[in-house]
Image (cartoon, rainbow, N blue to C red; front, side, top):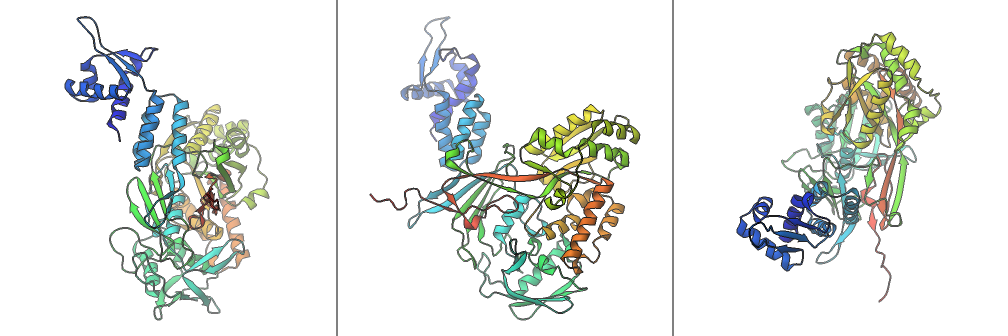
Length: 588
């Protein structure tokens, strides 16, 4: 990058407050030496270079009392755009975002700079010797913490892991049935205590090793060895036996009509039996090309047994502190409507408030929890905040909410409940992920609580802290989003030791809740639906968890991007994305 741009920006930032209306400023060589961190001799060299470029006019002072003046001849917006373009073209994304964040300019110019970044993001082609490579660029406001299927936590981690690893079967939403994946066929004995899977031949991991039944068995044992928080889902599985390289049989301690859901879940995504040091290795459509603190690169896996991705590479930049809109995914600037496609999809699951019963306090009182239930008015928050909040929730499934009567929350009733609880004015903490939408909702609740004399202290936390945080704070604002196989996802929410529910409820309440799921996997779909209904009703009736709102996923995509289809978490299917050249088919 041209050092002249850097020097110009350093001088401009240091002197902008002293600048006159005609873009001139009185300054000494000594002051410039401080700004540029160099000797007076080098300052004169820099000034000469900038004058030769026509960026400044330097007038040395003549005689005692006559100071030197410097005139800025290049608009700061133009210089910032030039530097930003240079950083983007060299892949220095983090520095590009730092430049915008640090730029001491008005918001209009910052929006203009962001627009230049959005033009760079999205799908583009990079020339190769033999052909062009299509590359997708993305930004995330939080770091990627873990790429181990046994410990999948955030929705974005789940999304990435789904590109890297494969499961035995795949759930099909349209037919609500299972399709072949690593296994081309399966069967069970009459009482469903033995499930047999026949693996495809010739499937290879990213490092070239063949996938066999031994890898499937090892994956199950690994969940236990690693003490995965999802291990409760597999408590009925006694072992997995291998019969040759391509047959694996799971032995269960009791009948299990639900086992195909487990065979298709990410926790049982197959890893090599012999794990190697280094990057995670799976058999999915993408493999990891680079994994750094601020960047993840996914390369299309040419040896994939299924549908080889149409794009060749995905670059994901992790830049904590960058504010993202409430939409889950963005490839381009929504202001350029003619250059974008908008996709939206209502999500399964909901935002909710949960009380932390592992810490003592007034929230153990039922009247206090009822007061908060009335404060957390599901209809009012949608009306006043809008955004991606689309409808009041009476459970995790929109179908349950639609058939439920959701009354508005009365502040007068809330105040009466608060008095009845014996609340004495103490401050309570509310934890939430430090993101724009969650912050605005927490602030909304804090303001509403203050009306009836309830003091809430806002405690934003990094996403990574959500994995282990359990005992701090009396309340937490959280989100549970369900993938296509919503039965598995909802069961995981209730039984997985790593979910907010299992880390916030105390042992007595958890025992009551978990007892409802005894024998769950032996039931047919209707019986399982009844268990889910009872579990959601228990949370609702006792106000252990307060259902909030259902959420809409919305994304803006470059108009040249095709094959767009949002998944249940609000992300596009990377394997099907492709770019259309506007000039394809044209003749000279």
